[in-house]
Image (cartoon, rainbow, N blue to C red; front, side, top):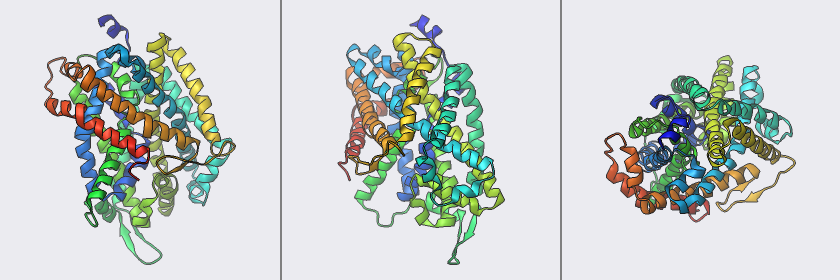
Amino acid sequence: MENQTKQRNSFTGSLGFVLAAAGSAVGLGNIWRFPYLAAKDGGGLFLLIYVILALTFGFTLLITEIAIGRKTQESSLTAYKKLNSKWGFLGIVAFIVPFIIYPYYCVIGGWVMKYVTVYASFQGAVATTDGFFTNFITSQWQPIIFMVLFALLSFIIVYKGVEDGIEKYSKLLMPILVVIVVFIAIYSLFIKHTDANGITRTGFEGAGIYFIPNFKGLTFSKILTITLDAMGQLFYSLSIAMGIMITYGSYMKKDVNLVKSVNHIELFDTGFALLAGMMIIPAVYAFSGTEGMSAGPGLMFITLPKVFQSLGGFGTFLGLIFFVMVLFAALTSSVSILEAITASMMDKFKWSRKKSTLIMAGITFGVSILVCLGYNVLYFELKLPNGSIGQLLDVFDYASNNILMPIVGILTCILIGWIVKPKTTIDEITLNGEKFSRKKLYIVMVKFIVPVLLLVILLTGFGFFQ
């Protein structure tokens, strides 16, 4: 084990690991899904439930996967088998998840890149025209071109390796990301707008809707819905059950305090999600009222460009730095997803990093093209078990997020909680004599509560709680 540890690439220290892992967690879901759910689910009430779940549910899953990675010094495809020889199948499922996600994530990253180029060329007004976004994603060649550019950036970073690629670029991109987010969040508070009916709304009023709990019409059923939304968002946001945190954990040095690192990742991810809400909700409320906040993912590509346009010349600058920020967030996440499948090939077949990256990037590139074509020549509409209507991208997203990820999470809890026992991960967590104050809570969570909550997420994906 010691020889393997020395030979394996690793982050130079705690900071490199935390920024890379936080970069993976901070992605598109924080920006276009978290604000929408917060606005829909009573503002401050959703935030309160989300934070409670982050400290319990999210912490348990996150520290479990990182501990598995550091203990086994393997990525997800081979780590589970190393813990128990009969559980190698779980590694295969955990590998399939990022393999499905990466191709369509690159497609969405390409969409973001398109908007960056629009604002960089001072054409922000074009992005507000009716049908601009739909016309773009349904065109045959443009989405492919921008997807290629985004995928190429991800490929270069992963190809360079852990220290010279992932850690180096995470240390560069994450601080810039934070500065941009804080700037836009503060600016949003001071936006003031009078609509055609003479009604004036401010960003501060929107922030009140975001932070102050709304108990109007609150029922037990509504609380369950909010809890389910918060739990689902947290589960997807933290890059859990995607093989990523196991892979990154395998690059963590043995002398790093695992508990502190996980706390920092959660703090970063939750803080970024809260700031994303502060960026978007006050601005959208000022211009569109509460109705404008019900646009879901369309908030980012359709609603926000109209907000930027209404701010005149400064709006073009604000739009540019916003989409640059989104691009950075998408890039740090896509890099972690590609790294998860690349590292799995390296560990399973003992291929070199260059060979593994080239093969995995090449295969997933082909799938990304199919996803792009899913909005034109391969277009279809399929009703999914959760009641939504989806195209090819939506089918991939549904299969990975709603079905496979909860299954991986449940089986991981069963393996750690009941087969190899929690002591396996706890020994790794306290390897250097670190204090683990949430040890008893962790045991209860991993054995009983978390698998039940994940089962609820899985059943929701199958449409049981519509």
